[in-house]
Amino acid sequence: MPELPEVESVCRGMNAARLQAPVEEVWRSALPLRIGKAWQEEGLEALTPGTDPGRVTRRGKYILWAFEGSTLLIHLGMSGRILICSRDERLAPHTHMCVTLADHRDVRFIDPRRFGGVKFGRSSTLWESPPLATLGPEPLDLTGEALEARAGHSKRVLRDVLLDQRVLAGVGNIYAVEALFLAELHPLLEASRLRASAWARLAAAIRSVISSAIEHGGTTFRDYRDASGAKGGHQHALWVYGRAGEPCRRCGTTLVGFTHQGRSGVFCPHDQKRPRSRRVV
DNA sequence: CAAGAATCCTGAATGC
DNA sequence: TGCATTCAGGATTCTT
Picture 1 (cartoon, protein in one colour):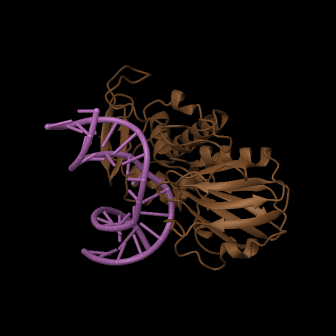
Picture 2 (cartoon, helix red, strand yellow):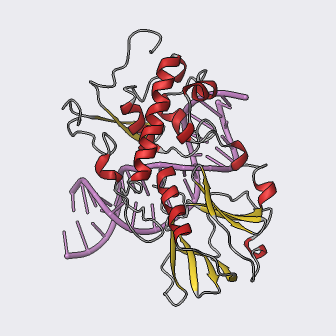
Picture 3 (spheres, helix red, strand yellow):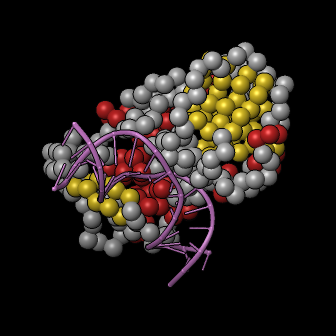
């Protein structure tokens, strides 16, 4: 489940691989990818041989690979992965895109569940339309004020608000659940009940958990691997995610699992109480 | 407009 | 052991 720290690790790996040789060939499987079905301004065939690749950057969970005024946008979805290998390497099952460079290396997009997607378009217009245009702020420089401005009136529960990419870009279920634990806020608390101090605490917790996970190279729960095939290390640093029924690392209380909106979550009933008062400080 | 529900996938984990 | 069932979840589209 690649979220921001995993996507960041993939981007760093792609840049470290020094992908500088011009494009020789681009291939795309015929199978549909889920994300970006509506993105059809310019097909991948517009990425023509001879084009020079540029740097790889990131916005939220989207990978942006620059090519002379155009950008290849990649979303890893649930099970997506980038593989850099020799062009002679056999195509792994579920390979959906392959960019062959003149130095005989391939950059491949592999995605068994096909929840990810790729799109190629002019860099100038890419930012003006969804999904990039509607993304919320980046978590690393998030403030409590920004969070409150975007979600302070919402009747949704905190966990769901943090998953909304328009509120905040790049956070998924793992880091939403972890950040709420660090901020000592109940995941099923209604967002509109929080006061400014609680929003500030939550923003700080998000910055903290995201930067820590980046330092660990992301979290590998099941599928995730970086561009060199390595697992992340943050799964060993998780406080609550995936630990329902186990003791809280801070207080020893048995952690409680829940399902809301079809998404699982975990919290500590001692450290993340549901307050009785109307406003949560 | 906001919020919830349904949708799409396959591999891993679980159940019998 | 083997087969069938359940689960996991991001973004988009549809419905209320």
